[in-house]
Amino acid sequence: MSVEQNKATLHAAAEAFNDPKARLNWFDIHDPSVVAHGLGPQPLDFRGMKEFYHSLWEGFPDLTIAVEDMVGEGDEVAWRLAVKGTHQAKFRGVPATGKQVNFAAQYIFRFSGGKVVERWTNLDRLGVLVQLGAVAAPA
Image 1 (cartoon, helix red, strand yellow):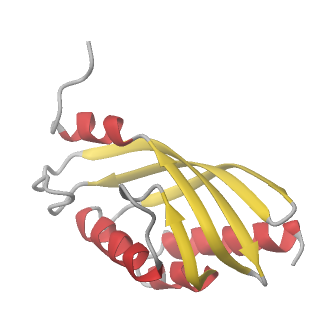
Image 2 (cartoon, rainbow, N blue to C red; image 1 turned 60 degrees about the vertical axis):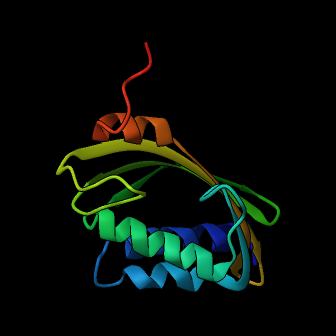
């Protein structure tokens, strides 16, 4: 697949991610052998990645992503996102606060045969925890 085809796949996946009725289609871009780095302390397999996102969507049911940048080369595509959502249920041990969070996230996806086989995630976890009031802002 070309870089442009992989970018198109990600754009379609972002649309699915933002639609609660189509959200599960987010997983369709991932190969069952995917290795997901950065969602937890250890890389996650497909099942672990799905558990992470189900937990995320339960905690932030209105979560949306906006693609701000996307670049690709070879079999990899990277994007920079603006993410926002309202904390409406327990997530990662933090009880629902009703607060809206806004944070940045960056991903690199490695494709093979039109599917994501490896991915790296970097997001502003501290910023999210501060916005939720779970930790104090650094001095």
